[in-house]
Length: 280
Image (cartoon, rainbow, N blue to C red; front, side, top):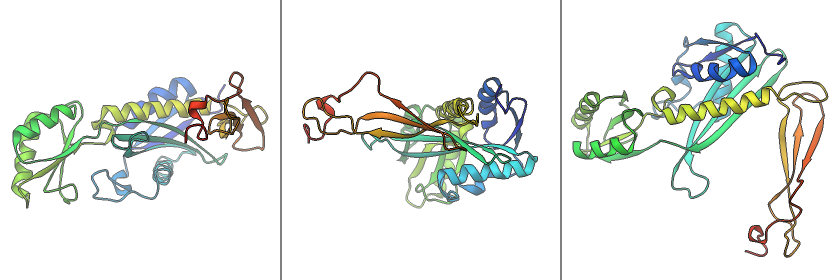
């Protein structure tokens, strides 16, 4: 039985994330999720740029978890923080990184779940209603909500959580009236409750966290026993030079010094097509 079975973890959010955390962690871990929204998490950063993010993605998630633990009075805390960047393959598409943190204050453990994938993060400048209608379709509106700002993405005012055509029309007219250049900026609302694609990524990151919480160290039984490093350098089948391909995974414990190596059982050599020496 998992050591967190029938234990209570706090989660601080005002964007509905407690639902997906509970759906994953309650059946897989036996963890009770207690929710609070008594602190405005927008103070730690907003996607619409009014407030810079508090530190790194991990820093912000850790801060949310710590505040939630203090508000509810638990020694276990959960939190999520998302980030949007260019995709790692072409650099041209929007990519979403989701991190879910679990803090066990009593045992001084910090375990994170992670997922990354293509984001629904469309944005553009428009000046006519017909342009906005076309954009809304490509932005998966209304299932994915929209945000509108006058002039550009740096304007301090915005209308968020636009979820139907009437709200969209009213927001567009408001933004046009306040624009200094006759154009408005529109984008997907990236808050979790307003962006089902992102919420699904949070769910997948939570599954990754659950797998780690259920992975116990063979030596001391501490949760979070997981891959700590990857040894690379599999030799090329043509020239014999080391490549960037994986030789082995190094598993390790968060508490004790126990380590284990999971070697490659099938591949002994790398395909020459993956060799930087054969294909500079």
